[in-house]
Amino acid sequence: MTDSKRRKGLMAASALLGGVLVLTACSGSDDKASGGDSSTQAQADEAAAKKSSQADITITPKDGSGNASINNSAAVTVTKGTLTGVTMTTADGKAVSGALSADKKSWKPSVQLERSTTYKVAAEAKDSAGLVAHENASFTTVSPANSFIGSFTPEDGSTVGVGMPVSINFDKQITNKAAVQKGITVSTTSGQEVACHWFSTQRMDCRPQDYWKENSTVTLKLALDGVEGASGVYGVQQKTVTFHIGRNQVSYVDAKTKEMKVTQDGKTIKTIPISAGSPEHKTYQGVMVMSEKFKETRMNGATVGFTDSDGKGEYDIKDVPHAIRLTSSGTFLHGNYWGAKSVFGAVNTSHGCVGLSDTKGANDTSTPAYWMYSHSIVGDVVVISHTGDKTVAPDNGLNGWNMNWAAWKAGSAV
Image 1 (cartoon, rainbow, N blue to C red):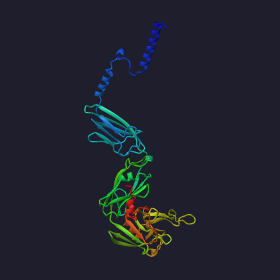
Image 2: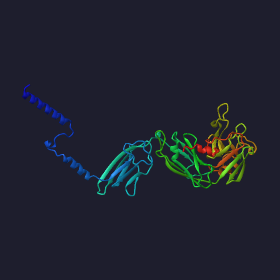
Image 3: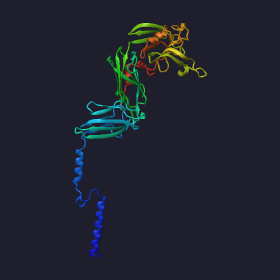
Image 4: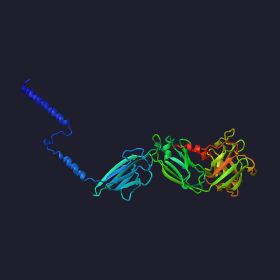
């Protein structure tokens, strides 16, 4: 190869290499050769920044978040400026009402959000120079499958008897009991110590060592929002409930004497003849709490296992008057109009309930059953003895008083 050919080959290779370098570099060209100025873009960026608003908007939850709380997660805040507008909508465009703080530094929804719903938030703010800033975000709230709630008794604002525990039933199994229990507090104006006991992974009751003090006020606080009750399952409740304890009424049923003594503040105010469970169908013994009241209700033996050979209930009375529930398994204190008046105070004839003389229709105000019904409130205590049967289970109804204090506290998760 001649020197001239060698030089031409090197020049061609050099040109080709140079072309490759130009094609693969982001900004490798010579600005002077292209007629550009390297400072031009930087100057333009700096100028644009100087004209931008200093207001800094933050939207929570972060854009793209999932399993967001329905109570506290949604919020818009701003620093170095004030909010001039916030809109929050569901994915289908339904507006969510909200409130701007007095200083216009923050905004929150004024309603509880829905579960398993996607929300979009658009916010606008101005800085001291009047320059406008914008921010947008979208998030999805926790789904029912990934959340739990607790149904509780008694109701907010109610007046109940001295035996009424706080009973919470969860709609999901709780495996992290300690975390959930720490999110629940029960306090009383009487100053009594209150302890909670887990009967299962879905039920927790709370009570003091002895009955609540009459005329006290009890407060239940549920701070479960965001609490992980089981793997991937979070609480959504944030609520405060208060209820009042009424007069101290405890009734004592003696199946041997077939009498019930009703006491208030330790003094007997009424003695009522009764008919308890027969020898074949004894009544549970122990401390029982009134959990429901019905002026009239249907009682069908088939629902509690009392059936004839044809499978139908041994009894089916569609208008039992003045019925007060004592257990979830079907023990009631109720009026009886179908039995002879002579059995009350003399013979135990029932299928396990405690019967009081009554009149069909539940409108006769002169009957013992009417008196008992009208003088009782949910949460009053009935103590039943001398039936010959076993003591009622603590979780059969609201009857945790049949467990001693040490055993009760042993059921706490904290």
